[in-house]
Image (cartoon, rainbow, N blue to C red; front, side, top):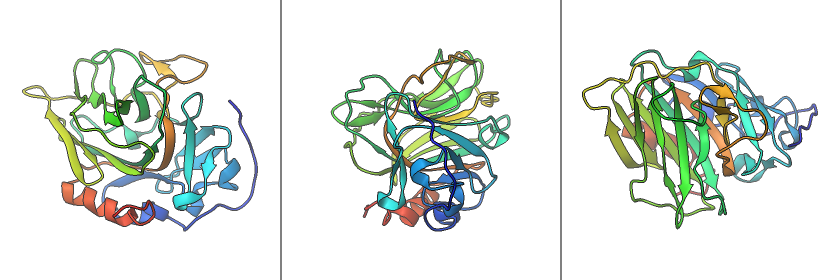
Length: 265
């Protein structure tokens, strides 16, 4: 794992996706296409800043930037990770709503385990501590696996819905948590699956852990040290976090705001 430092001007259009699409309820947004995102040239940046609230993520990658499609971070599936210190922006209140939207490009990979695209949960047993996950797993292509939320006693998650997607293409991957009871996952503008918590309400899914992209360095609520686990191989261009449950129409609005950038129709 290599850390590179530099200074200089950023790349891209000020605001990027953080000023397009749905803005109501947007509490944090990282976009590689936003000029305010980096303190220096993105090809050698060591931090990635949220342009809404100023939350700073630390980048631990080597040769980590691709200038195509407005820019994206490259994750090698070994030791590349972005870590953002804990903040209320990604810890909704009891029974609070939340939406996370990620533009990402999963790479053809030999990794057979789950890959954590973005999460606050860390590795470990569900229902033992709080947090949330957005994960995928390799099949013929890739599929949603273990994306969900948990408090310290119970969880709601979506495992393989039976739908697989091709590697090496851009997708808008969205998780919507509605009123503490219903979880819905979208890929682009199509609902992949939804599940409810039944008669029980998931309470506080917040914790004291960082937000991490590309893997996790935590297990059962504690730092593990060393390289991340459940590593993601591919590219991530943006992460948007809302304190509201976006509708299907809202997800479509976000998709349409960026589809040209990512070569989508």
